[in-house]
Image (cartoon, rainbow, N blue to C red; front, top):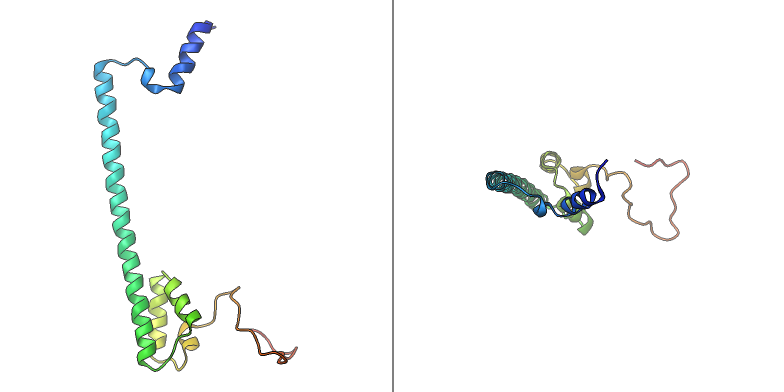
Length: 136
């Protein structure tokens, strides 16, 4: 069993690692390893940031290309359509939309069906959908 004094020293040391006695060689090694860890973490963070920036730039370029193509073909994306395009960061999906936009006759045809859960435009008052009509 540990004495109260030893327990108190251990509690203090666990709350403040700087109070743990260490030899000069152990301190030098600890500081070296901490610096290496920071250097590695910084390099990994920078690499990740560059990759994310590149991916974001590619998506932005495809979004701009899609909007330009739609407008060049005389198709006018609504604000909702443009927001949907700008919100898409999936370059594969943007590529599919661009390919469809090359031959589509409407923006809806180019972008395909709206994602599940998105709301359709409200109907004009007094106009209701027949009960037999199906949603797609």
